[in-house]
Image (cartoon, rainbow, N blue to C red; front, side, top):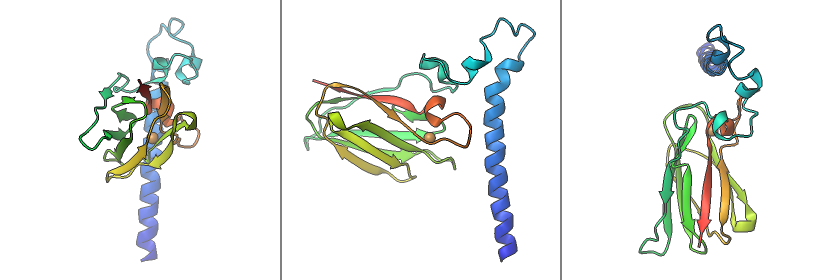
Amino acid sequence: MKYIRNILIAFVIALVLSNAFKAYSQETKPEAAGAAIQETTPTLAAEGKTDEKDAGHDHAMGTEKRFVATIGADGVQHVEVIGGDYYFDPNYIVVKVNVPVELKVKKAPGYIPHDIAVKAPEAGIDFKKDLDKDWQAITFTPTKVGKYEMICDKRLLWFKSHKDRGMDGFIEVIQ
Ligand SMILES: [Cu+2]
């Protein structure tokens, strides 16, 4: 029994490592492309250390997916967000101030762990939840108009954070 378990563990480790390697080689690919290497952006830009938000996104879901919440018959703004590798859908949520929000979150299929976090206690929004394959509800009432960052704060070893990979969005609270 122990033997089988060890094989399983080794398999999972190999899977994680191979995925990490794949992600890493995808990241470094632009540097290897072509002879005109002087023309391309310096290596530092590929590290995701740039200030321009979009430059750090190396995934297909870099575009904004906006969702404007409406107030339901129950007086609550219902919002659903799915997090996957490496995106939030939607990634730009607009809610009204001083109206309760029920944010339902879940994880898209896949073995990479993700969470969703907003740290804006000054606006009544302060949560962090590990995403699960089942829907989980987060409730809060935004109390201050503004734009608050929503991220996945996971990171595998020394690789780029999930936030830098695209798990980065906003909750905008409007009047
Ligand atoms: Cu994540």
